[in-house]
Amino acid sequence: MHLQALQRRYDDRRGSRIERGYDEHHERLRLLCFRRDEWRCRGCGWEPDVVRDCRLAGIDAPPAEVVLDELRRAKVAGERHLHADHVVPISGRNDPRRLDLDNMQTLCNLCHARKTMKERGLRPVARMAVPVPER
Ligand SMILES: [Zn+2]
Image (tube, rainbow, N blue to C red; front, side, top):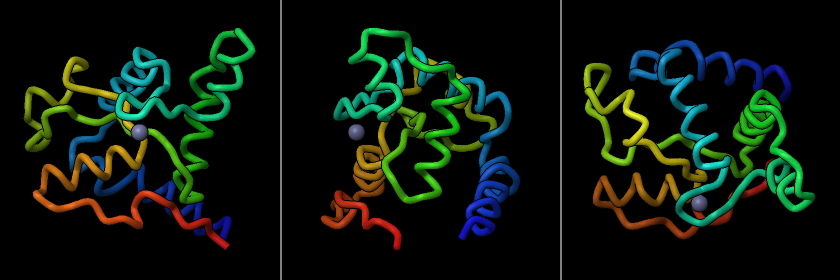
């Protein structure tokens, strides 16, 4: 399981994501997007526990690396996490909106899945709303 998770992380960074235009520029922009939105989903207000706990305690959010690590862990584990979403979907690497912070918003994976399905003209599938915990 652990090795699988590592492999997935590696795959995520390496191949298709980069081909689709998710390079280091996008990584930087993604971070700016999360920070601007204070790590909170613009769709439903969900935020990672590490962020929420700090906010409720009245202290600053943890360092970005800590939150990003937590988001990576949650994604691999099939738990709720955050996306830096393109408000207007981009057509590829050369789309000028690709690296435009104004075209980005923080969405949790559930809101992101709903939005993506709407864009593709599909109706949301009920089971998308409740992630099944991995055993
Ligand atoms: Zn959401």
